[in-house]
Length: 263
Ligand code: MLT
Image 1 (cartoon, protein in one colour):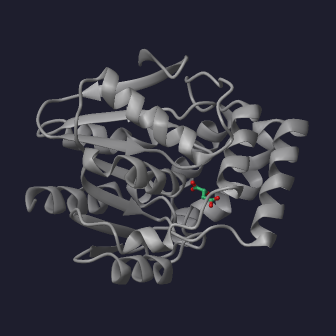
Image 2 (image 1 turned 60 degrees about the horizontal axis):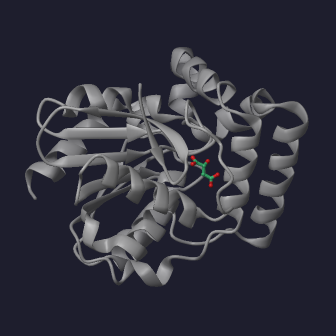
């Protein structure tokens, strides 16, 4: 893993391959290794960048603003450090939540968008409360306390029934994170703005991906986003839950490479 200082803290990242850049934004409460299969497949034709959000994986925690705008500014800072002006931005779930403020502030830096298993709406009051409770749980009991709650939410029923190795991989990612990083990300997500109005302003090529068995951000959310964004394409990955890039990597990679090759 390489390291670079961005906005006063060290971020861990990978920068592989050459060609048009694509940057992947990881989900909560995981890390950049969730993109391993995408790095491997895409780096033959593209410049592929992944990184750990502040407080996750091998990136430092820092003392940034508890708003997702901090993540957006970190992404902009990382692209600056890597000399990347414009990139395809692919965000999954929390990665998608952060892609919205990034697009809002830095739309000229986005050549195309891929929004996977995410939603444009903000949390409900009940959802916010659950986030603050989970932040408290992480702080009190550590990141491993989230495993039992998160795995059935993150993985589709097909994966849960047939692929324990994926559940084990996700568990390790969750456990490797700092509890405080997890807590701060939960607060950032709870405080995030509603981005529904932004959808109609998105004018770059956009691909929406969703797992057919996603319980957290179901296909109905993906359909709403694809209707609101002009000319967005929608791909539903069958037999996958909230993490189709891990659960069905070949299908996910096919959808991404097909989209990129048509740009
Ligand atoms: C994620 O996958 O990033 C999160 O589970 C999303 C969420 O909790 O809303």
